[in-house]
Image 1 (cartoon, each protein chain N blue to C red):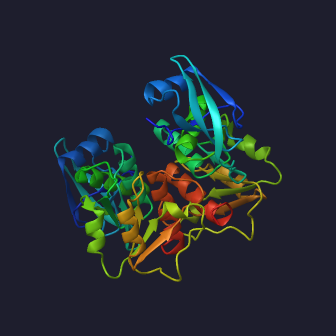
Image 2 (image 1 turned 90 degrees about the horizontal axis):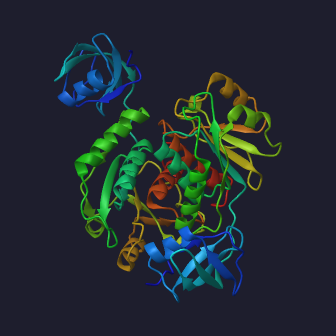
Length: 242
Length: 242
């Protein structure tokens, strides 16, 4: 079969004629699962050098070799946007990471809030999810998934130039708005836990000089829905959809 | 325990002092799973009469009785918006129905396109999902989930006053726009299958007098992400978020 629809993320630098060694899991995926063989083509990207067509040179059970042929898409980085979210049930946390990648977040930060149930996350598993989502959605960029960080510490040490949009349940039903022209500057979008923010967190957010409270319509959204809706609103208003 | 956070959909008319008989599954959920008993309160809605507080009068294994106390929220219907989507894998189809309910679609129509894999859906199961999503998100309205309908037949018999927004992959990267003031009129949002529309479908859509092609940003979105993003854009532009 031809693998021109197969997209593979790899760490290796990409350039014309570049030889690309494969790890065992990559070889298993390409040759065992997708049934590629020598001479077949696929697309590869490394998050920095755009998307390239590559051809299988050697196919083995424990490894293999590709050769980069020509660039098929330029590198395209998303806007400087972080998505902060409080981890919820496993499937929905996976989903938020996948959706944040598709929606063009540059960095994904799981945060522990006063009402977050989950005390631990598998950062490596979530990073693998982001990578797979980038392979699927045709992107050339893979967002970094950070380790779980306490929200209060994150806010105490907040970058002085990064604006923060958060969804305030107290505003339910108000039209979502952001002040003036805030495109082209660093941003973060914060999705609270399903139990809402604590009073201390709410006060901290409301008094934060770079924080902007918005509403996401008249209905209450689950955290995963809120993540996609908030990223859509932000991309339309400040990001690369405009 | 108090059940004031529990929300239950039931068919029965709601009014002050109204007696509300429970089915066996409802009784199992309230008394077996949620451990409510006589005197406990909960919220109920029927999709027409708003949200009411109700109190448990009788609790049995095979049934029970509630009594409606007072209205806690008025009936709130969503805009006249249909969500049309091509069913995909089970979990993602369930997800689209859940998200469409939260995002305020009034009717959900699974459509069979030329490139739709799924030939059958369980309409009753999807309807139950919509109902559960309404219970969870605090809504008072449950969208109707229609049976699977062929897209070409739907378009051939299209209502003469209903505008149709569809996501055209050929426009990837363009800013999403809709003409003039098209709030307050009937609408539908169509999400295509993961394999895209066929040429025949694309031609039919592009030449349809009430159809509006839009793009959803520079990245390719999966169908479930596209559904939430498209509904967000529509609600901001034409719906009840404004």
